[in-house]
View (cartoon, rainbow, N blue to C red):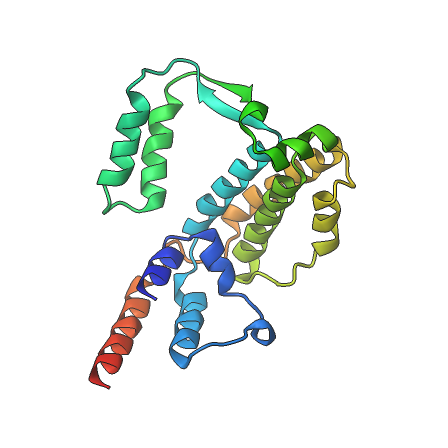
Length: 222
């Protein structure tokens, strides 16, 4: 439970999605679990999640297009330094680490290169058949649309209202040009929601941790 709370306060996309699972689809839930989920929806959601979900979506889109962005010049020891930084500075949030690394990388020229050679067999087969990875494309577009919905309404609807479109993308029924247009339009819409967001700028962590502490105390006293 502690780890889950930490993740939703940081805006972890997958853990945040769990806050919106419809009740009739939950097979088992303790009263403590329900109370944390209720508080999570009320106090954990914040505008911090925008960068997390959009970053996740960007990564999925690059996988869909079988490309990656790499620095044009890179010293051999840089990956080791960045890896050490990521593992050593554990008091920083994931978002803070990503911001520092992205700031570090912005100062150098980058280029877009093909990542087909490094793809797994299944993903490579999809790219060869459709011109893009259908699975990653569907994920990327779903994420962008979810964050738009979340910023404007404070909710994510499941099952997804655009499920048929997402299934069409996943099944390779749309051209590469069509999904690129859908992605770019969805991304532009998401960017426009930043100024309209109804979420708080930061989560109210004290409320959730206070309740977590009361659960721990109760459990220890039993």
